[in-house]
Length: 491
Length: 64
Ligand code: SF4
Ligand code: SF4
Ligand code: SF4
Image 1 (cartoon, each protein chain N blue to C red):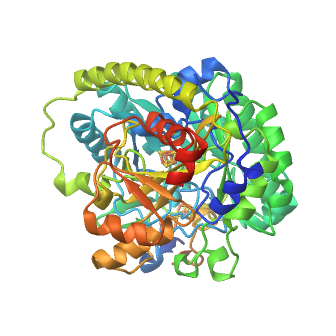
Image 2 (cartoon, rainbow over the protein chains, first blue to last red):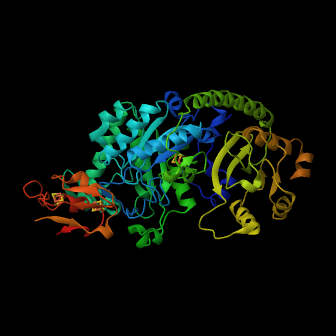
Image 3 (tube, each protein chain N blue to C red):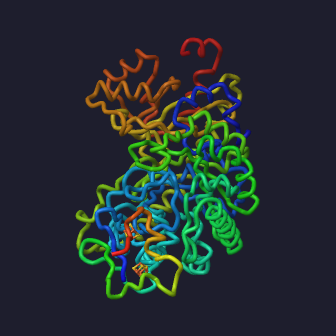
């Protein structure tokens, strides 16, 4: 059973390029059916399997939370306008609330007491978490004292990281994300107009050269000390795509365990240099092409939604608004550690069960010789088909064939930019979002929307409500292709 | 001899406070400001005023 299949080689993939292929390269068959991605060291997989940012499967079970405590930054990026918050480096949208370390710790406690799925706390800004170190460290110290079971991670441009490696190790921060966009200072000068280092503002190529050297130093030092490092790169068409394959090779060789290539998010309304000068972001096809060239896809992150710096939740959800400062209780009674431990035990059993069920279903489908099928799934998490069609704000798109089930991407149906309101508008937005996806599985759907969807050739099935995603998909696929006649009847 | 912050342009990021060698910058009330009595314009310590060098907004840390 091949675990890794390049989507680029499949005919269906080209249809999906129309979708928003975020992240990319694919964590091959849904991470649930195997111990982990094929090219990842099992020891690293053991460390990251509960981290929603690193494991697509964990995205279904665990929640991450980012707090926005570090506003100061030591460089300027052309894709960032600090007046508003950075649209790239994992934080689109405006971070509504800036917190002191004490306020942030209180918020984390409140969320931890309410959300047993919480497994990770990250600090990614809104400036640079390693440069604004005092605030980052104070927040982590406060949280760790009360919630030792929550994993800590931080994101940085790398410039200040070499100064704090000892503390990062001592504080048990086991994941660091470095945003590295190029290896070439000439290219860097087009991305970073200046870099502030050791008391001086360095502009152009000189500044970029300092930054890039410090990024490599940070990567090497962290890896040498056993800290997991993910590298993020923002793909900027016409500026850094030519060097991306080499960058991928170098950061992997230096020990980064994941390299996540993300599209530039650029819009004049963001007021960034790139936004104002009309620098465009890559198309889904361009992004996919670069990700495919970077080869070993299993290490890339298709499921990443580039969370806001203050996001709270699982999958695409953001419950941040439920936990704004004014809504926090004065005192937080319990920290929910027992609930989290019980939840983790349950997840371990559930994952084993899901894996076994998927393997059994796989045996059924293994003999089908037919083209792969794209299916949209409505889920609230837990790896099951458990969401009402009408409540879905995003669809998880999977591809199924005899080789197994692969997560392809997620497609949002609540796009902020779409002004539409009312049921009719929503449905047409969903239909647009699901272009090229002939089947949707959900927990329930009303008769009227089901008929409307059928009119445009999208079949919505609620017969496998509450089933595991992989099992339902494989059964569906095997069912459709059981005999040529039956296949003809349904297809 | 001192610098000042043009408050309406300030993003309140606090980078100038981190870099100021004279501890002249603080968040007082609702905004960052420079204590003119403490500011040395970084004379003798740095080639350029640190607040102006690190500030992300042009013309926001300026001579008073
Ligand atoms: S969307 Fe991206 S940044 Fe957010 S939790 Fe998932 S992987 Fe992490
Ligand atoms: S000029 Fe120098 S001493 Fe004065 S506020 Fe700015 S950083 Fe501080
Ligand atoms: S560095 Fe500039 S923007 Fe940031 S707080 Fe100081 S004056 Fe304001």
